[in-house]
Amino acid sequence: MANQSYRLGFARTTAILVIAVVVSAPAWGQGRLSLSERVERLEQQASSGGSQSAVDLVNKIQALQSQVQELQGQVEVLTQQLAESKRLARDQYIDLDSRIGKLEGGRVSPAAPADPAAAATDPGLQDIQLGSSPVPASDAALAPEATIASSSLTPADEGLVPPAEVATGAATDSAAPAVDSTADPAAEMRSYDEAFSALKDGRYAESARRFQGFIDQYPNADLTGNAYYWLGESYYVTQNYRVALDTFSALLTRFPDNQKAPDALLKVGYCQYELKQWDAAQSTLNQVVERYPDTTVSRLAQGRLRALSLENRR
Image (cartoon, rainbow, N blue to C red):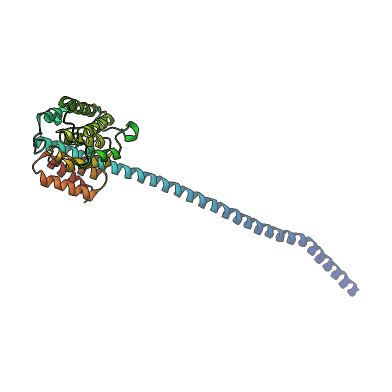
Protein backbone atom coordinates (compact mmCIF):
# COMPACT_ATOMS: atom_id res chain seq x y z
CA MET A 1 0.00 0.00 0.00
CA ALA A 2 2.78 2.34 0.90
CA ASN A 3 4.62 1.41 -2.23
CA GLN A 4 1.59 2.22 -4.31
CA SER A 5 1.27 5.64 -2.65
CA TYR A 6 4.94 6.38 -3.39
CA ARG A 7 4.52 5.54 -7.04
CA LEU A 8 1.45 7.69 -7.27
CA GLY A 9 3.29 10.65 -5.73
CA PHE A 10 6.29 10.20 -8.04
CA ALA A 11 4.00 10.10 -11.07
CA ARG A 12 2.33 13.32 -10.00
CA THR A 13 5.68 15.05 -9.47
CA THR A 14 6.92 13.89 -12.86
CA ALA A 15 3.77 15.13 -14.53
CA ILE A 16 4.12 18.53 -12.89
CA LEU A 17 7.75 18.82 -14.02
CA VAL A 18 6.84 17.89 -17.58
CA ILE A 19 4.06 20.45 -17.63
CA ALA A 20 6.40 23.07 -16.22
CA VAL A 21 9.00 22.35 -18.88
CA VAL A 22 6.41 22.43 -21.63
CA VAL A 23 5.00 25.73 -20.39
CA SER A 24 8.35 27.43 -19.82
CA ALA A 25 9.97 26.37 -23.13
CA PRO A 26 8.03 28.86 -25.35
CA ALA A 27 8.70 31.71 -22.93
CA TRP A 28 12.42 30.93 -22.92
CA GLY A 29 12.39 30.74 -26.70
CA GLN A 30 10.57 34.05 -26.89
CA GLY A 31 13.20 35.58 -24.56
CA ARG A 32 16.04 34.48 -26.86
CA LEU A 33 14.22 35.80 -29.95
CA SER A 34 13.64 39.13 -28.30
CA LEU A 35 17.35 39.47 -27.45
CA SER A 36 18.33 38.68 -31.03
CA GLU A 37 15.93 41.24 -32.33
CA ARG A 38 17.30 43.81 -29.93
CA VAL A 39 20.87 43.16 -31.09
CA GLU A 40 19.78 43.41 -34.71
CA ARG A 41 17.92 46.62 -33.96
CA LEU A 42 20.99 48.08 -32.28
CA GLU A 43 23.14 47.15 -35.27
CA GLN A 44 20.67 48.82 -37.62
CA GLN A 45 20.62 51.94 -35.51
CA ALA A 46 24.40 52.05 -35.40
CA SER A 47 24.58 51.60 -39.16
CA SER A 48 21.93 54.25 -39.78
CA GLY A 49 23.54 56.63 -37.31
CA GLY A 50 26.98 56.28 -38.97
CA SER A 51 25.55 57.10 -42.39
CA GLN A 52 23.84 60.20 -41.02
CA SER A 53 27.06 61.31 -39.35
CA ALA A 54 28.90 61.03 -42.66
CA VAL A 55 26.22 63.10 -44.36
CA ASP A 56 26.43 65.74 -41.63
CA LEU A 57 30.21 65.85 -41.97
CA VAL A 58 30.01 66.34 -45.75
CA ASN A 59 27.47 69.12 -45.28
CA LYS A 60 29.71 70.87 -42.77
CA ILE A 61 32.69 70.62 -45.12
CA GLN A 62 30.67 72.08 -47.97
CA ALA A 63 29.48 74.91 -45.75
CA LEU A 64 33.07 75.68 -44.74
CA GLN A 65 34.16 75.64 -48.38
CA SER A 66 31.41 78.11 -49.24
CA GLN A 67 32.51 80.39 -46.42
CA VAL A 68 36.12 80.23 -47.56
CA GLN A 69 35.14 81.10 -51.12
CA GLU A 70 33.05 84.01 -49.87
CA LEU A 71 35.96 85.27 -47.78
CA GLN A 72 38.30 84.95 -50.75
CA GLY A 73 35.91 87.05 -52.82
CA GLN A 74 35.82 89.68 -50.09
CA VAL A 75 39.61 89.71 -49.94
CA GLU A 76 39.81 90.23 -53.70
CA VAL A 77 37.33 93.11 -53.52
CA LEU A 78 39.26 94.71 -50.66
CA THR A 79 42.53 94.27 -52.56
CA GLN A 80 41.07 96.00 -55.60
CA GLN A 81 39.68 98.80 -53.47
CA LEU A 82 43.06 99.26 -51.80
CA ALA A 83 44.83 99.41 -55.16
CA GLU A 84 42.26 101.91 -56.43
CA SER A 85 42.66 104.02 -53.29
CA LYS A 86 46.42 104.04 -53.73
CA ARG A 87 46.07 105.03 -57.37
CA LEU A 88 43.65 107.83 -56.55
CA ALA A 89 45.90 109.06 -53.76
CA ARG A 90 48.86 109.07 -56.13
CA ASP A 91 46.91 110.88 -58.84
CA GLN A 92 45.60 113.47 -56.40
CA TYR A 93 49.09 114.00 -55.05
CA ILE A 94 50.55 114.46 -58.52
CA ASP A 95 47.74 116.79 -59.54
CA LEU A 96 48.07 118.86 -56.36
CA ASP A 97 51.84 119.05 -56.72
CA SER A 98 51.42 120.10 -60.35
CA ARG A 99 49.00 122.88 -59.41
CA ILE A 100 51.23 124.13 -56.62
CA GLY A 101 54.15 124.12 -59.04
CA LYS A 102 52.19 126.22 -61.51
CA LEU A 103 51.21 128.69 -58.79
CA GLU A 104 54.77 128.95 -57.54
CA GLY A 105 56.20 129.06 -61.03
CA GLY A 106 55.03 131.30 -63.76
CA ARG A 107 57.38 130.45 -66.51
CA VAL A 108 57.05 127.43 -68.70
CA SER A 109 60.64 126.56 -69.40
CA PRO A 110 64.07 128.19 -69.08
CA ALA A 111 64.09 129.09 -72.75
CA ALA A 112 61.79 131.58 -74.43
CA PRO A 113 60.06 130.62 -77.69
CA ALA A 114 62.52 130.50 -80.55
CA ASP A 115 60.41 132.78 -82.70
CA PRO A 116 57.15 134.76 -82.52
CA ALA A 117 55.36 132.22 -84.67
CA ALA A 118 56.08 129.46 -82.19
CA ALA A 119 54.95 131.63 -79.30
CA ALA A 120 51.70 132.50 -81.04
CA THR A 121 51.01 128.94 -82.09
CA ASP A 122 51.65 127.27 -78.73
CA PRO A 123 49.43 129.03 -76.17
CA GLY A 124 50.18 128.78 -72.48
CA LEU A 125 48.59 126.29 -70.17
CA GLN A 126 46.00 128.75 -68.89
CA ASP A 127 44.68 129.33 -72.42
CA ILE A 128 44.22 125.73 -73.59
CA GLN A 129 41.52 123.25 -72.72
CA LEU A 130 41.88 120.34 -75.11
CA GLY A 131 39.24 117.66 -75.38
CA SER A 132 35.79 117.45 -73.82
CA SER A 133 36.52 115.52 -70.63
CA PRO A 134 39.04 116.03 -67.82
CA VAL A 135 42.36 114.26 -67.97
CA PRO A 136 43.10 111.58 -65.37
CA ALA A 137 45.37 113.06 -62.75
CA SER A 138 48.19 110.71 -63.75
CA ASP A 139 48.07 112.22 -67.25
CA ALA A 140 47.17 115.74 -66.19
CA ALA A 141 50.80 116.72 -65.72
CA LEU A 142 51.43 117.03 -69.42
CA ALA A 143 54.08 119.39 -70.66
CA PRO A 144 53.61 122.60 -68.72
CA GLU A 145 52.33 124.30 -71.86
CA ALA A 146 49.14 122.33 -72.40
CA THR A 147 46.60 120.07 -70.77
CA ILE A 148 45.09 117.53 -73.15
CA ALA A 149 42.11 115.41 -72.24
CA SER A 150 42.55 111.67 -72.19
CA SER A 151 40.75 109.52 -74.72
CA SER A 152 39.98 105.91 -75.34
CA LEU A 153 41.47 106.32 -78.80
CA THR A 154 43.97 103.69 -79.90
CA PRO A 155 46.00 103.33 -83.09
CA ALA A 156 43.86 100.40 -84.17
CA ASP A 157 40.67 102.40 -83.68
CA GLU A 158 41.56 105.66 -85.35
CA GLY A 159 44.64 105.00 -87.43
CA LEU A 160 47.32 106.73 -85.43
CA VAL A 161 50.70 106.74 -87.11
CA PRO A 162 52.32 103.36 -86.38
CA PRO A 163 55.69 103.16 -84.61
CA ALA A 164 57.53 102.38 -87.84
CA GLU A 165 56.49 105.71 -89.34
CA VAL A 166 57.49 107.55 -86.21
CA ALA A 167 60.88 105.93 -86.36
CA THR A 168 61.18 107.06 -89.98
CA GLY A 169 60.27 110.60 -89.03
CA ALA A 170 62.73 110.46 -86.15
CA ALA A 171 65.69 109.69 -88.37
CA THR A 172 68.85 111.73 -88.09
CA ASP A 173 69.38 114.96 -89.95
CA SER A 174 71.53 113.25 -92.54
CA ALA A 175 68.74 110.80 -93.37
CA ALA A 176 66.02 113.46 -93.49
CA PRO A 177 65.08 114.96 -96.85
CA ALA A 178 66.38 118.42 -97.56
CA VAL A 179 64.07 121.36 -97.04
CA ASP A 180 62.58 122.80 -100.20
CA SER A 181 64.19 126.20 -100.59
CA THR A 182 61.04 127.38 -102.35
CA ALA A 183 58.75 126.28 -99.48
CA ASP A 184 56.00 128.73 -98.81
CA PRO A 185 56.29 130.05 -95.20
CA ALA A 186 52.54 130.67 -95.13
CA ALA A 187 51.83 127.10 -96.22
CA GLU A 188 54.24 125.82 -93.60
CA MET A 189 52.52 127.80 -90.86
CA ARG A 190 49.09 126.74 -92.10
CA SER A 191 50.12 123.08 -92.03
CA TYR A 192 51.37 123.42 -88.46
CA ASP A 193 48.29 125.33 -87.33
CA GLU A 194 45.96 122.70 -88.77
CA ALA A 195 47.78 119.95 -86.90
CA PHE A 196 47.74 121.93 -83.65
CA SER A 197 44.04 122.76 -84.05
CA ALA A 198 43.26 119.05 -84.44
CA LEU A 199 45.14 118.39 -81.21
CA LYS A 200 43.24 121.10 -79.31
CA ASP A 201 39.93 119.73 -80.59
CA GLY A 202 40.75 116.26 -79.29
CA ARG A 203 41.15 114.75 -82.78
CA TYR A 204 44.33 112.99 -81.74
CA ALA A 205 44.60 110.57 -84.66
CA GLU A 206 44.29 113.40 -87.13
CA SER A 207 46.74 115.58 -85.22
CA ALA A 208 49.25 112.73 -85.18
CA ARG A 209 48.95 112.29 -88.96
CA ARG A 210 49.23 116.03 -89.57
CA PHE A 211 52.24 116.54 -87.30
CA GLN A 212 53.96 113.52 -88.87
CA GLY A 213 53.21 114.96 -92.31
CA PHE A 214 54.63 118.31 -91.22
CA ILE A 215 57.83 116.64 -90.00
CA ASP A 216 58.18 114.72 -93.27
CA GLN A 217 57.57 117.82 -95.39
CA TYR A 218 59.56 120.29 -93.28
CA PRO A 219 62.24 118.24 -91.49
CA ASN A 220 64.43 121.21 -90.58
CA ALA A 221 61.91 124.01 -90.20
CA ASP A 222 61.83 126.22 -87.13
CA LEU A 223 58.66 124.51 -85.94
CA THR A 224 59.75 120.94 -86.59
CA GLY A 225 60.97 120.46 -83.03
CA ASN A 226 57.62 121.68 -81.75
CA ALA A 227 55.89 119.31 -84.16
CA TYR A 228 57.84 116.40 -82.67
CA TYR A 229 56.73 117.42 -79.21
CA TRP A 230 53.04 117.69 -80.04
CA LEU A 231 53.21 114.47 -82.02
CA GLY A 232 54.51 112.83 -78.86
CA GLU A 233 51.64 114.39 -76.90
CA SER A 234 49.14 112.96 -79.38
CA TYR A 235 50.43 109.53 -78.49
CA TYR A 236 50.83 110.18 -74.77
CA VAL A 237 47.24 111.24 -74.14
CA THR A 238 45.98 108.15 -75.97
CA GLN A 239 48.22 106.02 -73.72
CA ASN A 240 50.50 104.90 -76.55
CA TYR A 241 53.44 105.38 -74.22
CA ARG A 242 56.00 103.38 -76.18
CA VAL A 243 55.53 105.39 -79.36
CA ALA A 244 55.34 108.62 -77.37
CA LEU A 245 58.64 107.76 -75.70
CA ASP A 246 60.31 107.24 -79.09
CA THR A 247 58.90 110.53 -80.39
CA PHE A 248 60.03 112.62 -77.41
CA SER A 249 63.44 110.93 -77.61
CA ALA A 250 63.66 111.83 -81.31
CA LEU A 251 63.06 115.48 -80.43
CA LEU A 252 65.87 115.41 -77.88
CA THR A 253 68.19 113.74 -80.38
CA ARG A 254 67.48 115.98 -83.35
CA PHE A 255 66.76 119.27 -81.58
CA PRO A 256 68.52 119.19 -78.19
CA ASP A 257 68.42 123.00 -77.90
CA ASN A 258 64.77 123.33 -78.85
CA GLN A 259 62.49 125.23 -76.48
CA LYS A 260 60.52 122.02 -76.03
CA ALA A 261 63.56 120.00 -74.93
CA PRO A 262 62.95 120.42 -71.15
CA ASP A 263 59.31 119.42 -71.55
CA ALA A 264 60.24 116.52 -73.80
CA LEU A 265 62.75 115.21 -71.27
CA LEU A 266 60.09 115.41 -68.58
CA LYS A 267 57.66 113.48 -70.77
CA VAL A 268 60.31 110.83 -71.46
CA GLY A 269 60.38 110.26 -67.69
CA TYR A 270 56.59 110.15 -67.59
CA CYS A 271 56.47 107.58 -70.39
CA GLN A 272 59.05 105.43 -68.65
CA TYR A 273 56.98 105.69 -65.49
CA GLU A 274 53.81 104.55 -67.28
CA LEU A 275 55.77 101.71 -68.90
CA LYS A 276 56.89 100.66 -65.39
CA GLN A 277 60.53 101.29 -66.23
CA TRP A 278 61.11 102.52 -62.69
CA ASP A 279 64.91 102.84 -62.74
CA ALA A 280 64.93 104.63 -66.09
CA ALA A 281 62.10 106.94 -64.98
CA GLN A 282 63.93 107.88 -61.79
CA SER A 283 67.13 108.58 -63.70
CA THR A 284 65.38 110.72 -66.33
CA LEU A 285 63.38 112.71 -63.79
CA ASN A 286 66.52 113.37 -61.78
CA GLN A 287 68.13 114.70 -64.97
CA VAL A 288 65.23 117.13 -65.37
CA VAL A 289 65.73 118.39 -61.80
CA GLU A 290 69.48 118.77 -62.29
CA ARG A 291 69.38 120.39 -65.74
CA TYR A 292 66.48 122.75 -65.18
CA PRO A 293 66.42 123.76 -61.49
CA ASP A 294 63.79 126.18 -60.20
CA THR A 295 61.50 125.62 -63.17
CA THR A 296 58.05 124.19 -63.57
CA VAL A 297 59.38 121.05 -65.26
CA SER A 298 61.74 120.57 -62.33
CA ARG A 299 58.90 120.79 -59.81
CA LEU A 300 56.78 118.40 -61.86
CA ALA A 301 59.69 115.96 -62.01
CA GLN A 302 60.14 116.20 -58.24
CA GLY A 303 56.43 115.48 -57.79
CA ARG A 304 56.65 112.33 -59.87
CA LEU A 305 59.79 111.26 -58.01
CA ARG A 306 57.88 111.63 -54.74
CA ALA A 307 55.10 109.52 -56.25
CA LEU A 308 57.66 106.83 -57.01
CA SER A 309 58.83 106.98 -53.43
CA LEU A 310 55.29 106.82 -52.04
CA GLU A 311 54.60 103.74 -54.13
CA ASN A 312 57.77 102.12 -52.84
CA ARG A 313 59.07 101.85 -56.37
CA ARG A 314 62.35 103.20 -55.12
